[in-house]
Amino acid sequence: RKEVEQDPGPFNVPEGATVAFNCTYSNSASQSFFWYRQDCRKEPKLLMSVYSSGNEDGRFTAQLNRASQYISLLIRDSKLSDSATYLCVVPSGGYNKLIFGAGTRLAVHP
Amino acid sequence: DTAVSQTPKYLVTQMGNDKSIKCEQNLGHDTMYWYKQDSKKFLKIMFSYNNKELIINETVPNRFSPKSPDKAHLNLHINSLELGDSAVYFCASSRSPRQGALTYGYTFGSGTRLTVV
Image 1 (cartoon, rainbow over the protein chains, first blue to last red):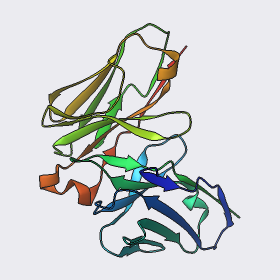
Image 2 (image 1 turned 60 degrees about the vertical axis):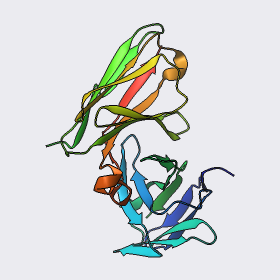
Image 3 (image 1 turned 45 degrees about the vertical axis):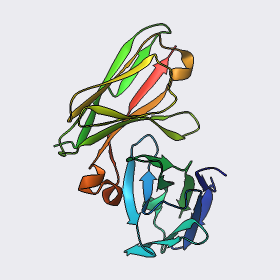
């Protein structure tokens, strides 16, 4: 099993839609997780941290299921500006190493 | 007031050349990283330094040599460049575990797009 797995998409949704991405991880010892957003030809930027059962920030909700080892990201009322690649990130190894998933591409259309 | 800055932003060079990429952060972080993002967009860690000490060294050809003169700077030197080295190289920084790294994640620089011809 890969350390971090995501559905690459793309997810093509209309404005206003609700969309959810899932991510599975292999290291059961991982404690905190992240969702990053990467726009085309830009650097990844932190969207949300997840280190308990879940976290909500406006239209974005991240949930963690430790028993099944998956993390989800829910985006409500999608905007055109939400179009990006969403990277699931999991700590691994001893020190500070973060492992990035390959990303899920979201395209929001009018 | 850029938090993590990399130079150059673009680098086009011929096979066999030696090149360097520089990175500086003004966030007061203890730890810095180099990541490589290839054409398939997969971000893979290469190196990490904590307070000038190498702490992560993934399976990277020894043509790649990081150097950290102080905790605010991490440079990457690449010898004998090959076509397969073409990628975007991202520098990042974070707090150390003592400072709560795994709570706050990493901050990335804007990347250096390296093209080897």
